[in-house]
Length: 275
Image 1 (cartoon, rainbow, N blue to C red):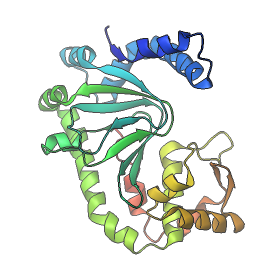
Image 2: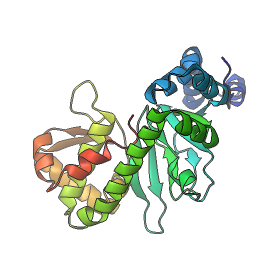
Image 3: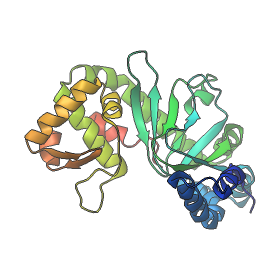
């Protein structure tokens, strides 16, 4: 099985430089060492998620799938780029956002085993969002022209994308109106619960398994940074959460949920990208 694994040579060359001793390069080496043994299984995982069982179609995936490592804050694609690939998050986390003069607006987050980067291809348009990794990530990519062929030949693949487009359209219809009538507490509650459903919790069962800056949390919940900080402090003083730097512990999820008038949009948002 052959994979075009981009940037491996570059990273190993950097790691092997005698003058380089930063933890970042050590982490890259550890990541690549960990990735290589299971790279042969990425195509199988990709096909399993989309229920592709036909041997010919599986070989098509194997022959065209590529893998790349991204470092924190590295861009996967920019707003305005042409869509060429379907992306599949293997490990790591990323944010999908729209750039704004005042502040960016995070539309959603990406977790492992999620597909992304395909909507503009089917409307013959360019990307209207950007994607940046929030931690070290490993991402697979396959040309959308190949995916179009699979969609035409594999009913379950076309059903997956139909479902995703239906969810995106439904959320688009609701989001503006729902968020506009939410107060700051409801917005932050929705954002924190969204992150808990999206990435899960750490072993203690309370700490969010993702680290965002206060600015990113504000971008996610459609408020400015100062309002995000102020509302976080209110929640902490009321015993709903605890904060330790970027670590956020959800102490009382029920009370956070009660802050949201209509949780339907929250639950639907978590389904995007899932198979």
